[in-house]
Image (cartoon, rainbow, N blue to C red):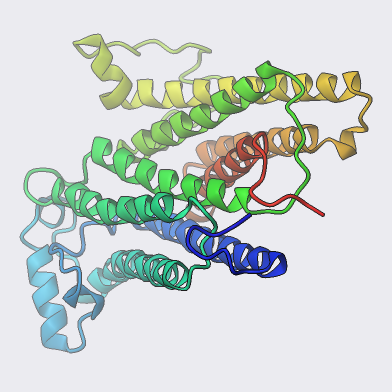
Length: 363
């Protein structure tokens, strides 16, 4: 292994540099994980429209005086959410929702700094492993784009709506997940390990389908959140008294139901969970049979072990989703369900990277 511009490092120094980069990326993932959860809390507490202006630099400073608080509150009073839903809200109540959104924006700015400055240091000091400079710069660019997407989402709820567009909310969440997955994928490649071939071409293909399925489920979950679809039909396993409820295609054209009909969106999200679980079971069985065919102990096969961990995580995530629905979206449980989705995404991404040879081989 060598860096792009500095062949002078010794092998032990190269490994140490790679470990530093890997640790930094996993720390970025941790902060992004917290950012997504705070964003979820912002949505669940109806706080996302409390700051009606986008000030990338100046906005880091919250109101410091009563006059500044009143100015922010007056701006909030101009939008439909206040006029139609929160008329008569006190300044103290406004502060409660303001702090959620402010914390979300502060974390977003912070993660940009946490990513950009170390990346500059690693690149300038020639500590980046070969070939990672431009991919990491691409991730940084996605982070910058995410800031614009965040404001694009918020702006959808400032003039005519009382909430943000579910389409823009879903794009915002998916972009966050893409950044998380990219960081995990790169970091996983820097972990020293022995390479193990996939037992079958099918197992690798199923891992790709699992990753795509995780993204689709997260997208559907964002639509559910954007439409408040989880607040209705709070029974399981039946939905509205049936396995397949009626009224799924009431809107015209029919395709709109999959994005704008809360009943249809929740049903599709439920069904997506079942499908993802079946794929995870099939994936584990393929890995298990492949390990047995090669005479490997299941504990010694990294692919079989990883597939089992993913299967267990998806089962737990499904249980969290059911309890969240039945108990009508309590904040902590809903956030746990969102956290579970990100954890599944991280596990599947790392597992998929494991099929490729590492940048650093274990001694």
